[in-house]
Length: 199
Image: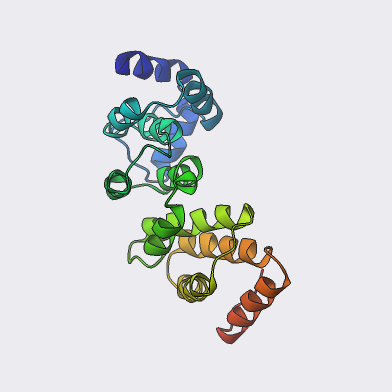
């Protein structure tokens, strides 16, 4: 099965995409440059599959890792496995794909998001903010402690050095503000106190 999947990547090969990633310093052992819609079509064709997702993610191949995040059933995967995957994510693209395709749907997504948001590691922070953006978009309102923690971490991130984390944090703050007037006021006043612009 794995061999067939890898052969299918060859048919999806897009040299321009692969070259553009290499030029940006994104280094996978193997990168076919397959576009995300084609990987999504492949994931839909194969269907959810825990064992296959585990096997795919072990490969240091861009397409394998992204496909794994699309195929892993969120209700079957344990937090410990997600922690191992997170440790093995080394690029912004795979981090974002994991957050959008899988992490936001985990039954324990909020816990992971709050833990990762407070991490020292930029890719963890990135995933944390992306998960919360999605949860807020789906109208999941945080409790008081969650609000305080989110605002504190977002302010720290917005004043940090990592551009990708700053963007993810601002996006999460915007989604938070869209939860309603009270949330918007909280977000705006917190940013104002930190001398930050609300975009």
